Length: 107
Image (cartoon, rainbow, N blue to C red; front, side, top):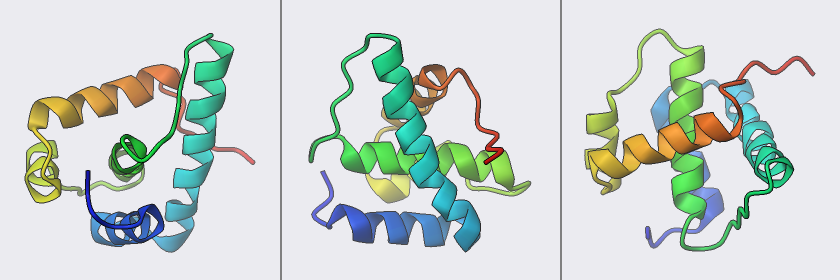
């Protein structure tokens, strides 16, 4: 678990991922969507100090790929963030499955 407050981690990851400021706001929308979809599917989804950083990182990763033509590879991100590639891929897959791969935001 990174030794940085989640709000600073969010800013750091979003700024260094290539997301534009308005795109970074969509991270919060997708996190809410993840929570709502998990609840609707009857899955227990708890955000705590053990998973919050992974949730932010995974959401930023997914949205960076969605919005941008050029982005860092999962291997590069995993290395910088101190996660294994296997874990990062699992986080990405889990988040996408929870929201049924629906990243487009209309509102």
